[in-house]
Length: 224
Image 1 (cartoon, rainbow, N blue to C red):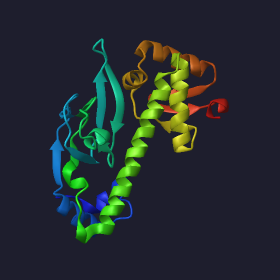
Image 2 (cartoon, rainbow, N blue to C red):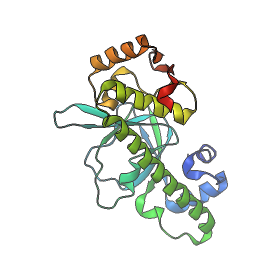
Image 3 (cartoon, rainbow, N blue to C red):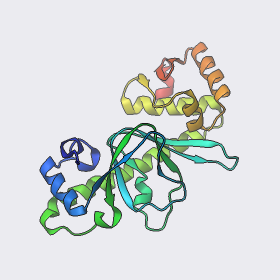
Image 4 (cartoon, rainbow, N blue to C red):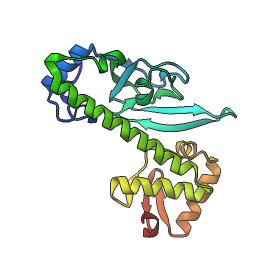
């Protein structure tokens, strides 16, 4: 059963009530899909013909570089999407794999039904599309933030770019990042040992403090 009330709190269905969501999703022939822990949702270079909205659970996007090393692209959480940009592209195949990190429930909407004309839900469909385009823009900006980290020449600069971006988004200097140490190293495309050494050095220099995936920025200069 589709949890329409829970969906009303997601970005895609902002300003829509559960009844409106139910009517629209029924017209769109949406369905629920379930994935087990470590089950693949999308394989790299596969075509994607549906828009997936995560209702519960988390997933991770990753890809292999030319040397066969896994690079984490992003985490997907409840209310987020799987392969959003690829789902809206007619010609492109998914450039990454998406894997469930825990039991996951996903709402699936066939791509061809996203832009169909629904005369009885015109206003609701227009709001839905506006929210969808906003989500596309947000996803593009997230990838831009990731690129900002990758182009930094040193491990320290990569870390500072990531932490300052999260601090500005959360509007606090103390926060939990969505990565363990191995995942953080993969996200920044650096060696895990080099990352651990640099974090320790940054803490010794009074720039940050941290415990596991909780960080606090001590130097206000990096937030400017």
